[in-house]
Image (tube, rainbow, N blue to C red):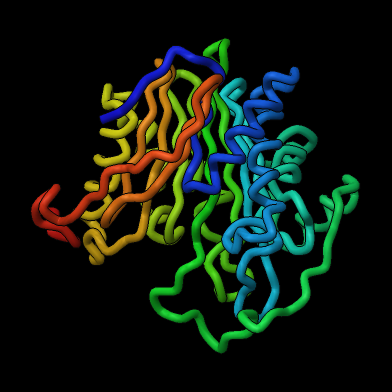
Length: 298
């Protein structure tokens, strides 16, 4: 069941490591920053956490031993967005994504072009030495290490924004880009309705424009949790994997309602507003929740 609060600003993010990010976002806002400033600052905390192996330069490298980062940011005001993908050696990809949004006519920059833009804009760099986990001849099946931070926020003025950042699937093929920097897949914000973010195995989100679907279900009147669940059901009905998808969603709407859902046993997500900061458990979903799955749609 979706929960609701009248307190603003409200921040919702993926995973327990989203809790300190939420708290940093709230403090940034209370210190006079904008909602976008808060999103950028909060996600920046996860990006520089040396213990986080799925976000930032501490993330698991690709199959050639190189850490490639993806991020995007979206502002409900003006329906603006920016992103970077396969970005190497830059400490804060979320900040580069915002600069793409604010200073260029583009939405997404990738690879060497994204790095050149970041360097031109004066962003800090850091070399990442190869580690024992770096080299792999191919992408192992069932590999872990794709726990993105997605954060969505509702401000006192009723405006929404969000951001997403990840180092991507561990030991991925060089140049692989998941859902995280793609608006409508890893993140989507509609200032009339709400915002949603995704985490999990990106390929299983991006084939279905997952976060966009969550927002559209909220537009139809579903609560955030219901919208997350219905999106998972819809994907599972079509995808040959059924519920073996490893996908999770968070969502927030204009009323201050928030919720989440995930495949299997669900996942933990973090919620923060003034006087409240907790890690919550989202409901899990299995085949029994929807009936026939895995392409059984006619």
